[in-house]
Image (cartoon, rainbow, N blue to C red; front, top):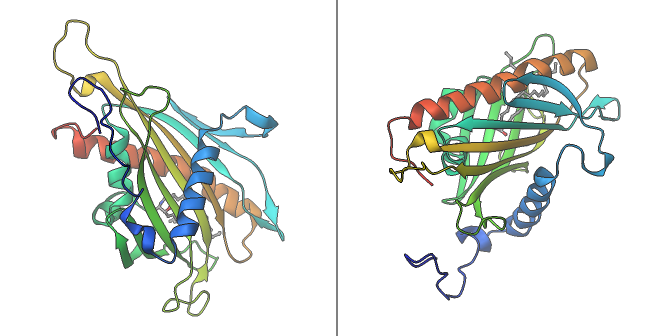
Length: 258
Ligand code: 18C
């Protein structure tokens, strides 16, 4: 909370999220902290071995080749800078179920299994089948959060959405035609504001959003490594370009949501 002068108001901080009484809360809290810390690490940090595999303008995508029991589980890290949108807007459109069919092209069916709170949902998703592999499905919780901007205390907040696989007794893994995939995804968004020099009000021309998207997907059952890596290479750039274009288009004539 801030006064008009920009001074912080001394109040007891509220609990981080209204979901804190839920059984999944300790896991959500731990995973969000870990994922945000990892997303904040640069590509060159810790000799991490990220290799660039796709690039388009400001968008850069890196992966590390990793296999578990012969299955490709390559971690992905993408960075992008998009003009005219805020981190809050990007996270709002990524998190909210009502927009998902608009931008998620690999989706066949999405169900909200549980509304844990306004910022925490549980999903079941069935994705399109890639011939000749089996169709995939996934159950995950999704949590959206505002983070303090430690580097620039007067600057806009940082926003994140973390998605992480979980279990649901009503949707057991590998029971039907689908093979269950396991994922951990973190979208981290920082808004940059460069105010106009002549003191005119801020417009979308003055803002941009630095997006970091990290994901690890375990395909859950054997799939040929070469086919999987080809799917990654095609689908991740397609997703990030299409999704950010969607957010730009949705927000262009709306007031800026910081
Ligand atoms: O993060 C993203 N989306 C979120 C909201 O939906 C959420 C869900 C992610 C699901 C990702 C896994 C999707 C698997 C889909 C199978 C491939 C379908 C391709 C269809 C082509 C016609 O976090 C954005 C996600 C962007 C997705 C990029 C694709 C990732 C590919 C992963 C492959 C997984 C195994 C597929 C097995 C088939 C092997 C030949």
